[in-house]
Length: 271
Ligand SMILES: Nc1ncnc2c1ncn2[C@@H]1O[C@H](COP(=O)(O)OP(=O)(O)OP(=O)(O)O)[C@@H](O)[C@H]1O
Image (tube, rainbow, N blue to C red):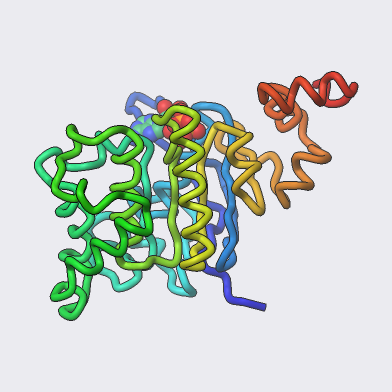
């Protein structure tokens, strides 16, 4: 059996607001991600999905629990310390709002080149233009747009810059936090198609965070359902959608516009 790519062991995150006010945003979540899998994380707003994604990507320290990436315990490494690790280039994150995550003073080329400058080998740095052009092409960004600044690009084009930047060093794991939620339905479909093609051509593994169950159903091999920081249900996507065990999962599925109506009409899924 293949080695696990990422292991989260009983990861918790408690936000302390002072004066005794605390919030457990993630509560003892365990998750093993195998190479090549797409794991979807779903749940209502505030259920802890983004916090878990940020902990997995080492952008935020957990309060307790372990994070093991490619067999290496990275539990004590976050932020700048993790960014200095060789493992850093093997795991990248794509964010919800590229306008917020892209530096307004960087052209698309500079944004995509940034990881090469920061994390690339000397050879890669010498080859920056070719790497940037390859990543842009893979992400479906026309070469003519590489000279543009974020404000000159559409939402869909910005999403593609963000994806190109994330894949420029060919990471093994992409953690995608609502990567298409700022886009309208048709752009969303294009970006999802691009992500699915990338997975095939580059053999990547995704953790895909979304409140959009239709999208997660389409993309994921396996899903985790989160409620108030806890995983209330997990399993193969087809099994969870076909025979949801938890009342909350049934409620989420029933709320999917098209699928929910069809299922309700068939007499199933009342919570
Ligand atoms: N940096 C922070 N400081 C304090 N509280 C936070 C912080 N980040 C998140 N939270 C809180 O933790 C809880 C979980 O938030 P999180 O963003 O992980 O949920 P989510 O499921 O991703 O929601 P959404 O879909 O709205 O992004 C929320 O109550 C949120 O307000």
